[in-house]
Length: 183
Image 1 (cartoon, rainbow, N blue to C red):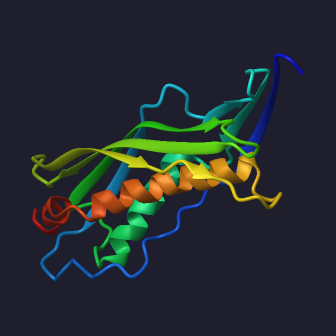
Image 2 (tube, rainbow, N blue to C red; image 1 turned 120 degrees about the vertical axis):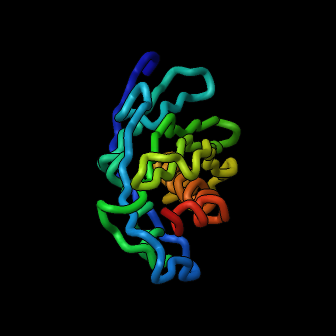
């Protein structure tokens, strides 16, 4: 199967951060979220090769990745007590990259994933209250031995973990929360 390419699709999901504190108060302005996708390839998450590079699998998400990231941000904002609305602050998220690398380091392989996003909070007057590049990363994930832990499972877990890590870093940043609470 030298030079063979197989395309497989996967459904990605975001698992909200459990038990976040309510951070918004009665004076907190409404918040809206917008996401732009600046990735060079908006469908391909990863390619994985065999030990000698003879077999390639392309993993393509079923989901609309920008919409999934927008919904994740909206969920985290809502869970912290922020209200959605167009007349307040705007959280802009620009996706730079979202990828996984699968290395055949053992029989089951190892997967590492990363999500790079630029997060900006703009006040209604157009001023920038917060701007930061955030790297969400998953540790290399070594599969256990059960057969259901295949490469597709590894990549899905790694990609989802990278998104979770990115959002946790954003919502753990006091400067981000303070920018949301003022207008």
